[in-house]
Amino acid sequence: MWKLFLIFLTLAVGYGFAVPIKHVEDSCTYPNGTDVKIHTYNCDGSWPIMVKNSQVYDSNGNVMYPIDPRKAMILDLISVNNGIVFTDNKVNVTIYSFGKNWLTGNCEWLKLETGTLLANIDGCEFAHNCPLQTGDLDLKLPLDLSLFAAIVNTLASNKPYQLEVQMFDYYEGSKHEEIACVVSQIRFSEGN
Ligand SMILES: *[C@@H]1O[C@H](CO)[C@@H](O)[C@H](O)[C@H]1NC(C)=O
Ligand SMILES: *[C@@H]1O[C@H](CO)[C@@H](O)[C@H](O)[C@H]1NC(C)=O
Image 1 (tube, rainbow, N blue to C red):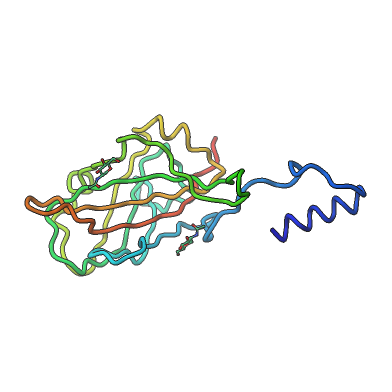
Image 2: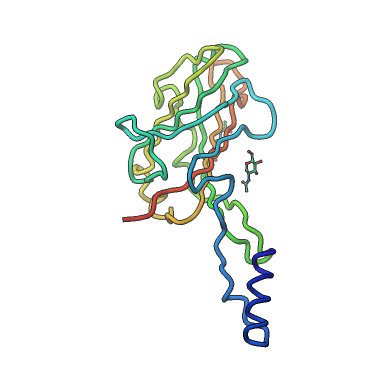
């Protein structure tokens, strides 16, 4: 707001009259330092599995940042399981982009429609890390967004994105309780 005001002031002084708002830069800056590093936190509330740190690797095990959504990646969630041993789980991933709400002028997260493409992912099959033991956990979640061409094509490279990863207990007889909920804010690499 302050920056906007300054630009407006400069223009107003410079030209002696008010100029259309379209001259003002309209992009949103990367929140939480995501221009240089992934930012991960637990959703509001308390979950049996809580994340402490995160990193994204390419298939060769090298840190990948910014992230190229066309390449296979591993979202590594350094976590702790304060609950029970989970023998089965399912994962839902929701993708949001960060952009300006033209009604309010605020930068906000906007949910992308990915249908059922990233829903009910079999966590055990996908990540080969079941059962999830108690105590310290190194959750490596392979994500291959390139399989979802429809999604990747909508991922413009010069905007912040966030992945909300929800994990549910799918052990027989469980009530499918949410056992982890994590938000990872990231930047996808500039397109080639
Ligand atoms: C930045 O991260 C904090 C948690 O670390 C979160 O509460 C906040 O909503 C994030 N900001 C944006 C703009 O997403
Ligand atoms: C996961 O997402 C799908 C699609 O949005 C939804 O139908 C399903 O109920 C979600 N899973 C859980 C356990 O909430």
